[in-house]
Image 1: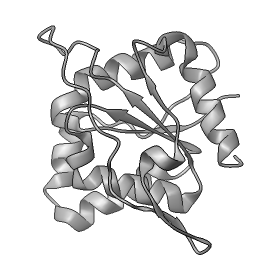
Image 2 (image 1 turned 180 degrees about the horizontal axis):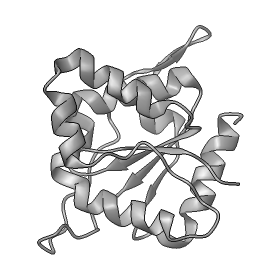
Image 3 (image 1 turned 60 degrees about the vertical axis):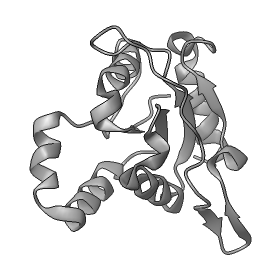
Image 4 (image 1 turned 180 degrees about the vertical axis):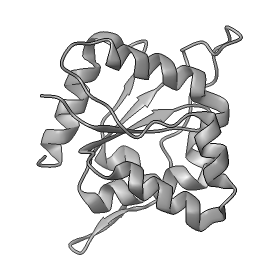
Length: 163
């Protein structure tokens, strides 16, 4: 089944690595994706301040059923990543994490493994706040053969969310 996916990642550090994942996704037959922005569009959005950024994120989440968090060295420290995760959770999106530190950037460099410690943000009226790693599966793009398995990871996240 084709899924509309929101990709969450630290743009400045990991856009090259994110593009590797995204392009593997779009080269597969019967897939769809959403929630990906180019630098020019995001720079324009940032000029509008925090409110504009949050409205843009909210609009990018419309029609998505899964949020894929591409975890690089500093992803867990990014304020808007946390917002994207909170909004994805509230919408009922399936969520999955993928470590991308072993992918090379445009200069051919890999990075250090990031953390899934985004803070205790995933709640419902019936439970306490939990950390990302307590609720969601996390894979490594290289070690877990992401190119071959990405579609399965997305479908699993959707099923786990009842989507």
